[in-house]
Length: 172
Image 1 (cartoon, rainbow, N blue to C red):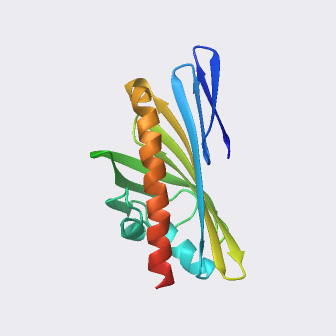
Image 2: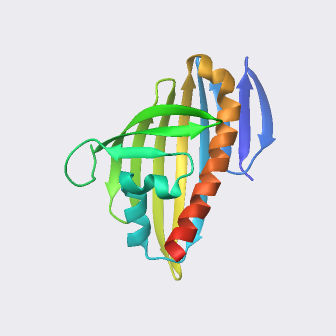
C-alpha cells in the first residue's frame, strides 16, 4: 500500500490507501492516482484506443464526450476538449498532449478551471499482451478544494471501471 500524507494546517495525518497520495499546500490541494491493468492485446491496440479522443467515451466511464481540436496526427502539442462527468456533475475541460512516444508513453495536461490534471499513460509489453498504467497528478484550487476528497474518490472508482471496460473491449 502507498502512504497517503495529508497536511492540514501544518499537522500531518497518515493513512494508507493503495495508489493514492494527497497533500494540502497553501491554496492548492494535490492528489495522485495510479492504476494499472494487464490486457491480453498487443501494445499497439492499447495505445491506439487510449490516444484517440473519438474513442475515449467507448471505454472511459467518466468521459461522455471528447474531440481533438487541432489538425493532424496526435503528437506533442495536439489539443482536445471534452467533458468529464463525476458525481452527477459535468465539467468541461481542454487538454494538450505533453508527452508522446508511440506505444510507450502518452501524457497530457487537462484543465477544467479549478481542477488541473497531468495525465501520464505507460504501455509495457508483456508476454501475454500489455501492462497499461494510468497516473493522474491533480491540483485543486479555489472552492473546489473542499470537495477534492470526494472528487478523488470518485475519479479513482471511474479509473478502475474504465480500465476494466477497456480490457473487455480489447480482449473480445
